[in-house]
Length: 391
Image (cartoon, rainbow, N blue to C red; front, side, top):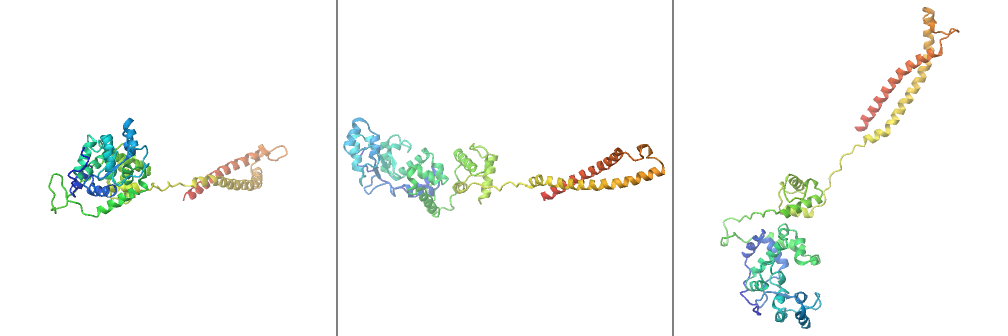
């Protein structure tokens, strides 16, 4: 390895940014936003070398035995981060570390535009850490290409497409991202670049200063993981019509998406786009109007005994009056029949009076009829009350 670390040091161009963004299905606004927050401004230092931060605690874990002992003794390695302050220029320490173990030293430094740790060389698309460092010495675009490959390897490229800034920020910076508000900075940077005209770019064609017509970029296809995430978010927000979490936009998922769009002021449809994904992040749980309940049956159950009691009181009073009337009325009838035809003589007793059982039979017959009338009246009264309670 050339320990001067000087190569062509080619700077990234405006056309490189949309080209590299297209590798993961994002526009240049996404890439610019990521670079604004996570990049070091430039991938090279004032001497034309890749920007570098040597990490002694990483060097420690990449060594063992006598090499680790030598590195610790030289002050180049220690077990925990932050044991000693970092020098302004990490290259002298890197060169000294290379003398102990080149591969371990290169893996223990953060490199270039977005400070990719050498340990991640495979995920960044290189066979060896030496190959990655040499590529970084030559071209700043290689720094950015390695960055998007890492986003894919760490499975956050879809989060970048969907503007899930907290996920991107935490993945790249660790749990401490909130302290530095990296997610808010990413969102603000993206909003800024949205207002700036994009660089004309068409894959496989030379760039021109002013294209005849703006290039339309088709939105990336929605992958299964994104659909599953949307389904879970909808379910968590109360859109139970979404059904199961299967990564497919079937009838049930489409119904839930249409409902969410309608209730959150989004354009109609059942597709998944940036507007939907952003709205899902901000949405509050769904509040459905409570089902209408009719309290009338409970009221009727409470009041029916009262209605029944009122009718029975009326029937009782009616019976008392009728009994008195029957006595006098029947005496007159029997007397008239006895004088006219003698029809009642067979049922008279020895004293010439009508027996009590005859009176009881007559009263029972009249009372039975009146009771049936009373029951019918009670039923009608209850029905009328129930009908009124439901209005």
